[in-house]
Amino acid sequence: MSHRPLRVLQVVSSSATSGAEHHTLVVARKLASRGIYVEVVCPPIPWMLEGLAQHGIKSHPIDMKKLGGLAAQSALLRIVRNGKFNLVHSHLSRATYLGFVSATLTGIPLVTTVHVETREPIYKYIGRGRNRLIAVSNYIHGMLKGRGAKSECIEVVYNGTDFAEAPVSTVAEVHDEFGIPQSRQLVGLVGRVAPEKGHHIALSALPQVLDKSPETQLMFIGRTEGIFHEQLAKEARLLGVESHVTFTGNRVDVPRMFDAMAFSILPSVMESFGLAVIECMARGRPVVASNVGALAELIEHEKTGLLVEQNPEEFAKAMQTLLLNPEMCQAMGRNARMVIQERFTVEQMVERLEAVYAMVVKD
Image (cartoon, rainbow, N blue to C red; front, side, top):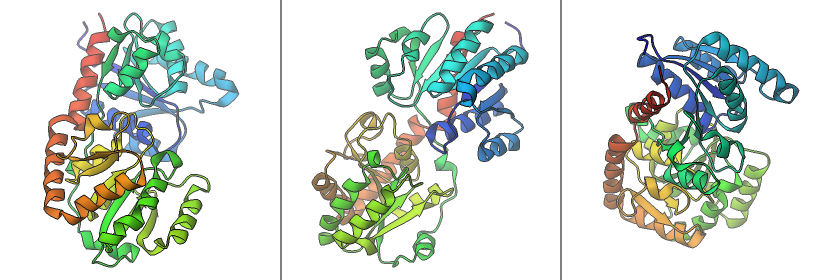
């Protein structure tokens, strides 16, 4: 094989500020720092283009919905041909459809990361030849296999986080910023404010929590979608807990928010991975989460957090357990941080990605 650096084209199709988009940016930066040549195709979203430019990574802003995808397909094919890439690595379904056509027509392999549960038929047909599907959890591996993808073409690569590297911040600062009494213990739910994340479960559990731990403040940290946050605010007023609920909106200082919490909760309906879980654990905080999807792969019950049924009563009991037993909570947090260092760092994630790349690239 030539000794020239491996050339990888990362392609992501969403213009949101969710896990897959940030994942693509982090992967591109880390690959570049390890000597791999990377370019990125993404929608024209300023924060991502700026983040790539700061690290000297060439980007190609493309509106992937334009003309039903035909213009995007033509542009991507041209980029792949001109760039002499060794492989295309796609993220999310639209990017995967476009990447599959471009990689096939140019004779190079496609690696695609499957971030969420999906019924898109493309994933069944990608797994052939040198192409590979990357599942972010064993749960996603099982989903792909159950829907017809060949098991030998699926690799599990857990997401990683670099949150452990951020400096530790002062708890009191967050209280002051939001006008929360210093006596209150903060419990956070990090993620977009949307029904599937289970915010209504957290709200319904709060009155029971306040009965035994009246100095508890529930913080919803994440961007709002539609009118759901207004419905939650109304529900909080009806429950009489409005003064114990804070909406922070989208934050760029999430490690700082975790540092201010006693622990976080995730009452999701389903999680294909649960990035907010490992980010919280990286800050030395345990997580109370629904026992759904891939969350049992991340949280060891009663060691790094608590896994419970997705209902208000179970969440209230689990939250009370940690609030009333601070030493237990802190011990779980220490265990959680160690687990992250052992299994879920960005460095480990990218090393595994490189191993997949080496598997699919031939002379």
